[in-house]
Length: 437
Image (cartoon, rainbow, N blue to C red; front, side, top):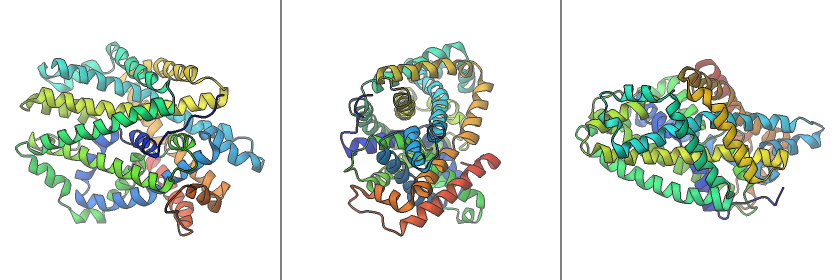
């Protein structure tokens, strides 16, 4: 295998990590959770969890990847092999395979988004009697497959150029454009008649919710979900870092940009939903059913819809790139394949394995639930236990502090070793028992 590629700048790394974190969950999950669980009161536990535990998890995964200069398979093996344990690569294959499974259905959803970008130009979905009927007649049908393939081809066309010239360069374009489009949409949504009810729903605190355990559970799950902690993606990104990169600062910057994006999404979605008297807790149908109904009724809705779905596409594509890169790195590391071969295999396997899901919405829903609720959350726990407990907390902190302008001190050890690992384990349990997260 050729010499390992690296990010050319810390900015490129942070934007790539932000691209991995900012995805479809920011656009529909955060807005309704913020509104439904106390508005501004929800932000108190959320900001605590995301800045204390989210940054801790990111530093751990960044540090593990940079220390090993490998993704999860190579990194886990490097921790365990000196201790006489030979199953590191097999253990590391678990989060890598999980990300591959997520990539399969994420490519399908990204294909849906591309389709809606094109129909926003033609106005096709605006001309139907029902956005729900339009989406129901599209999703799960053979006509979705070319859009699914196009999503994978776009990702393939970027990643084949590597990290600095492919992934990093793409995110340096995608992220600024995404935030600019978000700003345009925020201004439009907040000026709609009746938008004030949506703003009150988000930002007027209902302090009684802080007494409800579900509020803390939702805030905790959202904090872990939103920064993409899974024991694979951020380990891979960390493995492409140079020794002088500032990991603590990068973690804080990633969390901040992701939180800003989530708040902007709330300011886009909720004022518009309330202005048109629709369900603010619509969940997954929000993107493809509720909001198109708004665009149908809104003056200039075709233009606003195009800008919105273009921004959703950028968010989805940036996340799809990070998922595919995990699979590409695993194949390059395990089989010593070239990047071109690995990218092609990753895209082709995602397309082939995704066809049954693309053609059957019941299978699609079941697959998404099994992967995201029961399988994926454990990856963050495995990575944290390996780095903080087995490799050793003091050595892990030393690896994280290399290149840091403000190194984390010994006080951070119990936060990472006990609080983070304990809470991450709790989230896995909550996911399985209650589907919270």
